[in-house]
Image (cartoon, rainbow, N blue to C red; front, side, top):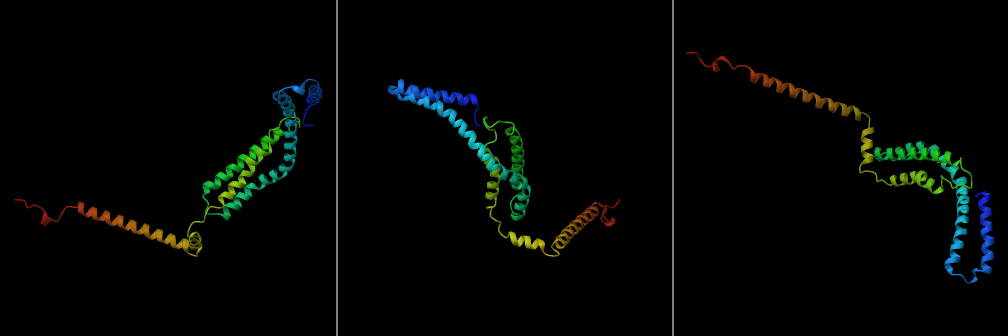
Length: 205
């Protein structure tokens, strides 16, 4: 399954030749010659074992991966509410990671489904862990961000009844005071620009 009939036939031929060579010619050969023959056989066998292993891991990982990606947006929303002191820029980066991981998984999965089991996989378990489940690792790291001092007190002040009205009233008072000051300044400047009283004017001779 994880190799072609031609490769399997070639492998069986090399094993048979190796056995004959070992008893007839290879009993007094140098170590390097043994290693070269063994390495050639191991290379083919390792590729077959790798494809088999990755196939098994895909079957194991993919259901959980699909579920994880399907729920990741809601998970990030809940995470942002649970840790509101984490900067929105960081939350945005997590969302971007999730978006990229979802697109990568869907595209690579489509490519993988076109391949036969005897072909080297393009969607590997290692890549899935790196690109998909690393999102959970990033969120775990962010969850350790310490809460700022007096965070709860500030939130409580903002949530008190009338807090917003008081803030609006303060802003209105500040604006009124500023406008009043501007008007007084304009009036003063206008007075200074007017001609002086007649008693202060030079007398005609």
